[in-house]
Length: 209
Image 1 (cartoon, rainbow, N blue to C red):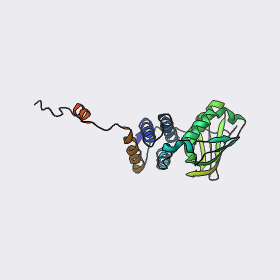
Image 2 (spheres, helix red, strand yellow):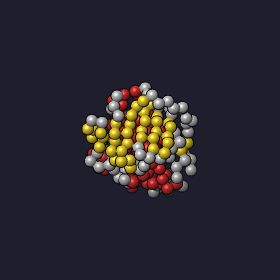
Image 3 (cartoon, rainbow, N blue to C red):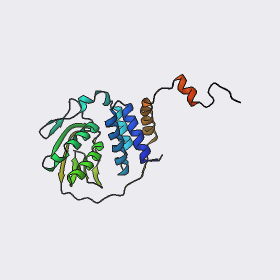
Image 4 (cartoon, helix red, strand yellow):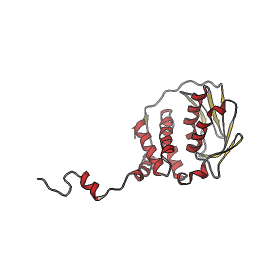
């Protein structure tokens, strides 16, 4: 399977909305999946796993609360809500290291970290026990595989140089992931009414032949 990045982002956005996220974070989900796919990562698989956790309907329990450099939630952190908070506090990365506790699907933080890197003019590193990634405005250097739940993840800025990678223009999701995202996206469509069926079915109940 192969889809354009625009198709993929649009489906990711609707799927996140169908899973209970507000439209603002659903748009961030679409953008994040697009960024990951463009940088050679399977963004659709990551989003599928996140949406299966059903964090959206109880998002307030999965947002980060800051205590100095420590970020925790009442329950596991949502990477979309946490990524939005990273964007809000990106300027603090110039002199402060963020330590995130119990964050789900940390790979989804990479696009937000890259945006923060562009904003502060330096690279940003994400490091867990299993993986390390460095991002800047145009490149990604990834070593290891991020856990589906990172007990502790550190974000820090520094003068780490990486080469820009080749950007992809297509996403190649697994059929099962694409189907699940489609199923969630279908929740955002209004159910058909008798009037809409008549308007949308050509001749409808009237035979003009």
